[in-house]
Image (cartoon, rainbow, N blue to C red):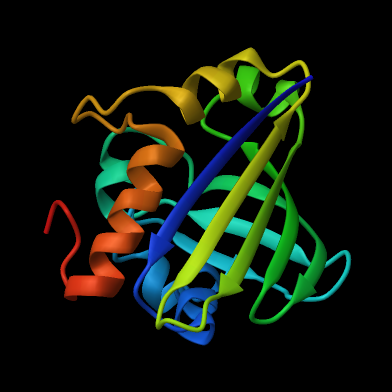
Length: 158
């Protein structure tokens, strides 16, 4: 098993950050711009739908899936997470992602993301890859884009 930790500080409220992570109206604005949907209860469904560009590139309609393990708005979300881009991705199975939001008294939040990966080398390479302009960049890029959007109102690439 490998565990990847990311930590970022964002000038926003915990509620706004939670909304940006869990709301499809926000998830289409940063990162890979997929439509994320969460049923925010234990064993609730998680899925991400491909956007129009992704579909023109041949990706399936549903590109991610998983389950909600724990949801404590606006501070903690634990979920399973699996890519569905290819049959090899599907066969790797589920990994575990934990989002922790710590509001700080000085007007911003600490966001910690932990991604636990067991025997999923394709997933591991994807979430740790450097930015390449063709869909790469992993969590570092997604979290940077999220921070930029919340603090400036504009995503990195928009």
